[in-house]
Length: 295
Image (cartoon, one colour):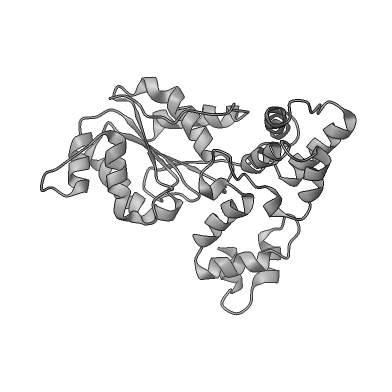
C-alpha cells in the first residue's frame, strides 16, 4: 500500500527537538496527538514526522485531511478513501474499515481533528482495538482524551537563541522579495520586530513574509502593530482557515463553548502574559466563577 503523505511546497525550518520527540513517541504509543494553537505548524510537523517514520510501516502512511468536513457525517468515508477502501457490502462503514485495517501495519494520520473530537475519539478507539498493527498520528487543537494517548504540544518558533522565527521569516521574505537585504541594519531591526510582534507563530510569519511581495518591510512592521487583517494570504496555496491570521483565530473561537468564548472576551483586557490568579481576579463574574476560570 503506497503512502499519500502531502508534498511540501515550501522549505521547512527548525523543529528539531519536536521531531526527535515524535520519532520516539511513534515507537512508544499507538496514538500520538500533536496539540497547539492554530497556525503553530502542527500539520507541517506531522508531514515531516510521517515521512521520517514511513520506513517503519510495511503498509505505508495514509493521510486523511479532516479540515474540509463540516460535520462528522463523512468522517468514516474520508478515512476509508485515505486507506484505499471501497466497500459495497451491507456492513456498517466502521465495521468494514476495522476489518480492512485488521491485518495492516501502517501509520494513519488524521489531520485537523479539533472540530470533530468526539467522533474521532470513537473512531480511533475502534480502530486501535480492531487493528493492532495500526498507529494513529493526530493533529488537533485539543487531545482526543483516549487511554494511552501520547500528547506532544507544539509551541511557536523561538525568537531568541537559535531564532528559528527569524530564519523562517528570512526565507519567506527572500522568496517574496529577492532584492530585499535583511542584513542591512534597519531591515534587520524591522525583521526582528516583526518576529517578536508575531510571537514566533509560523503561520503569521509566513503571511508577513508573503506581504513583502507588494509592501515595503517597514510598512509591514508598522501595520502589524494594530491589525490582524494586515496578514492576508489571499491567493496563496493555503487552506481557507489559514489565509488570514484572524481566520485562523476565528476557527478556534468557533470551536469554543459559550462560557469559553465569554472567558476569551474578558481575557482580551490583558495586553501581555498573565497567570491563573490574575485571570480569576479579572474575569470571574456572573456565570464565570473563580473555579470555572481556573479550570
